[in-house]
Length: 217
Image 1: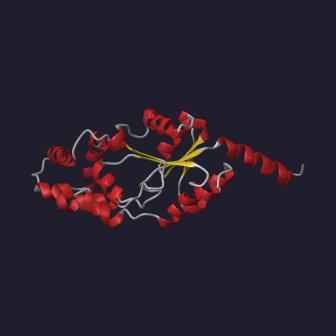
Image 2: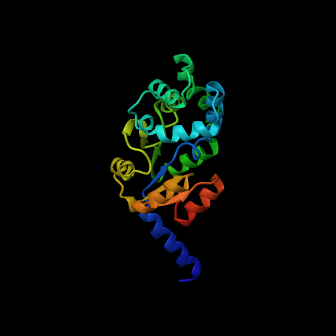
Image 3: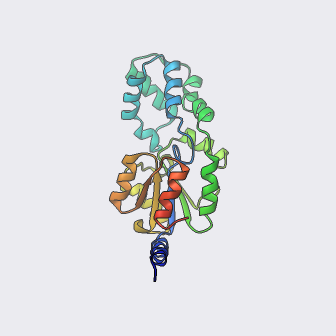
C-alpha cells in the first residue's frame, strides 16, 4: 500500500468517527452585528462605547438565558448607566434594528451546509437573545438543521458543558464524534476541553481545509 492509499485509508477511518457538525451562528453562518449594535445603542442612549460594553458584558447573561425580557434588561442597564429611560418603543428597538440591518446571512456558508447535510447531522449552538432568535426564525434560517440550540430557549450558554451536552443528547451523538465550529477561540477551547473536535472559524475556505483534515467534506 503506497503513501496516498495510506492517507486515504486514514481519512476514511477519521471520517467514520464523525457523525455530526455543530455550528455557531453569529460570526460563522451570519455576519456579526456586534460592533454595529454597540454603535447604534451608544448613539441612542448617548453613552461611551467602553462603558456600555463593560456593563452589558456583566449584565447580559439573564437575557441570553431567556430569564429576562429585553425591556426589563434595558431598564436595568439604564439604571446602571444612571441615565433616563428613552421610551419603551425606542428601548425595544435597540437590539432589533442594527441586527436586521447588519446581521446578514452568509450565503456561501449555507452552500456548504447544504452539502454537509447529505452526510452528517447538523446543529446550531448559539449564545443569543429572543429578539434575534425571532428574526432568524422569520428568515427560516434554521430549516436545514436537525437541531437548533439557542441559549435563550435552552437556558444554558457557552461555555457551559450542559449546553454542549444538550446538543449531544438531541443529536444522539457522543462528544468525540462531533465537530464544533465557532469564531471565538474561548468557545473552541471549551469544546475541546469537553472532548469535541473543534475548529476556530476564519472564513469558508479555511474551514473547508480544516474539515478535510478531519476527513469531513
